[in-house]
Length: 248
Image (cartoon, rainbow, N blue to C red):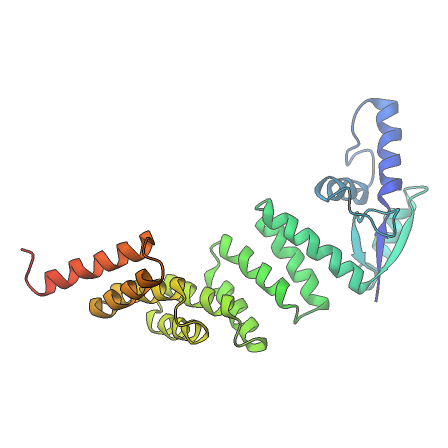
């Protein structure tokens, strides 16, 4: 599949011509909607990233989904150049845009870009991770969990995803499932401090303080000054003391 791309060079030239004549930036009442969208896209993308040495990625539309609508708008803009990209180049550039949007904390826009890429590459695990990040930042935790599940279907031993899923299950108060996934991360590295602390946190939450104490102390054996592990151990000890009647 080929993707239609409007050249930034021509968009920029149109902008400069209009500005020189009016000393005002173009707006939707002067140029068709497609140009306004293009200008916004130019502003949001890294101007140093070029295609074929002469084009910036500006605005992209799959030819198969917009049909004549895009062409009608383009005919109103005399001199606008178009190039065609392979699907691989299109999705590659969108991946760069997703990373940029996530850094700028523009999560809804990043999510839209992820969905667009996944139409063409539904098993792109890196994009699914980016989608999970955007969903989590938007507090759409169940959908974030679905992304982690999908990644693990393709890569069941991926440590980072196992850990993130364990942590997310804890946030969703699905404590037993959370413990199961912490066990999977500890099967990869039995001395992983984050997983030991995560599991200790779950045990503290469900009232199994002795297990929480053991795990937090094991984390401290690996990293003696870890403040979170110290806190978890002290919580467990305090609660054990209450259970044993040491505190009134």
